Image (cartoon, rainbow, N blue to C red; front, side):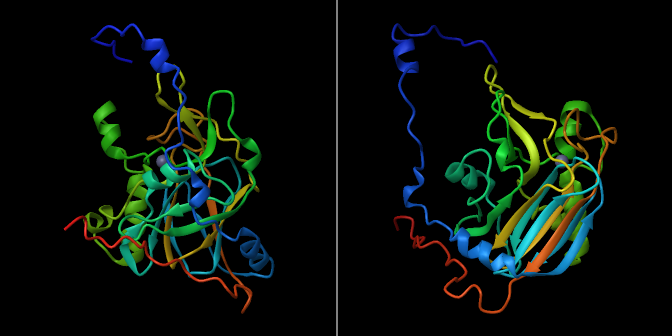
Length: 285
Ligand SMILES: [Zn+2]
């Protein structure tokens, strides 16, 4: 960390000792009916699947009220997930607000939220086989909303590289192919991700973003309920299990499986897709 330019005041320790307060206490956050979703998932049947190749990405679509599962297959692998409202790509996953509401990593019962002005839940996690991991001694945990996505611009900045299979580029190609967009059009829709299966945190001494070998093993999965109609894109990160490096072809990489499930008729009685946020957008005028 850079050295401070000014001396600490006499009461520095007292100021540091003030207890933090949680920015967004979530007692008033609308809670999902996870029991209802899980009951609906019981009799659901698989309607689609896509195998995401290593160092590449693929798109999938999930109707509102359906489920999708992301599974580790063949070997330890992390994935970078983008989600959009299938009917309006301007409404997309808002990593920063999800982090503010739920914390740095998300698990069962927590949700992925959409961008302003809609700001509503788009997907709710209903199962996480890595939920046992918790927070380790380094401050690391799984499925973060703190990383952005590996990208060729940062690689170029730090190492003068031209690497084309970072998650950012993989997601861009997959979205362009799926929607028939140019790369430039698709790229502006790619956004900060949910880092599926990735184990990350901030170092306690320097506050730097770190990654460590993912605890994921083949058979592990993360499962979601789609609150709105979703278009998803998942990249099997060139970092593999992220034990060493990313933004190169050196790590061992494996595919990721995405499966979509439809519930039986009538089992979601009482559930409805969330309304858009109720703020009136007059902004004081
Ligand atoms: Zn990546």
